[in-house]
Structure formats: structure tokens, C-alpha cells
Length: 162
Image (cartoon, rainbow, N blue to C red; front, side):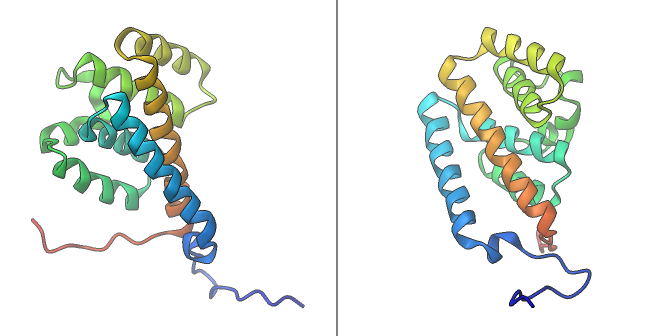
């Protein structure tokens, strides 16, 4: 017989709370990635666009909620956030942002080799090696957070803002 305390049937285990040392390590990684992104010259708004695009692909409501607010605080506009899923069909994003978004999508879909090759080619034209590395690390990190929140079913609660 096991000493494991199980969550009630139908309720998910919040893996971040259940295994806090692992979650703290992930949080530490995210802090290091944020610092590397800043050192590479990526502004906070671009980092948040990457976080949002990956979270959209993964369908993580919790991370979308968190990073939409962070993007707005970083100066992103509601218009650009609203069209982010269709960024390729607009002229609202710079070549540098487009390259970062393509690379973020390729990181979120690693099995799609043609997408990966196309994205990497575009990134080589618009981003430095440090920026490419930082974008990939941002995308890897938010992918991990997406999985924590999706599998834990972290709730998204309403706010009084309008």
C-alpha cells in the first residue's frame, strides 16, 4: 500500500505545488532566459509575443492570461495581440518580430522539419546568433510552463478589469 495522497477523482494535481523543487528550478531557468534575452537585445514586448504565440499553439489558457497582461504592460497593443494567431497575414510585425515568431512556432512544433528549416532560414536573415538562441530558449521555457499549467489545469479567474 502506498503513502501517496491522491487528489480527489477528476481533480488534477498541481505539479508545481506537488514538486516545488522542480518548479523552482524551472522558474530559475526562466529567470536566466529572461536575462539572456535582455542581454541579446530582445525587448520585453518581443519576449512576450513569443510567450503568447507558443501558448496559443499549445492552448494554455493560464499562460495566455498571464502573458497577455505582461505584453500589455510591456507596451504591446491590443490590435497586435488580437491578430497574433494570424501574424503572417498582417503587416503589423517587423521582419525581426516575424523571424522570432516563426522560430517560436518551429520550437513549439519540433517534429515539423520543413517549418523548422524555413523558420531558421528567416531567423538567420533577421536575428543575430545571440537573438536566435534567446528566442529558442524563451520558446522552450514557455513550452515547459504550458505543460505544467495544462496538465495541472491551472484555473484562469476573472478580473474586474475591462
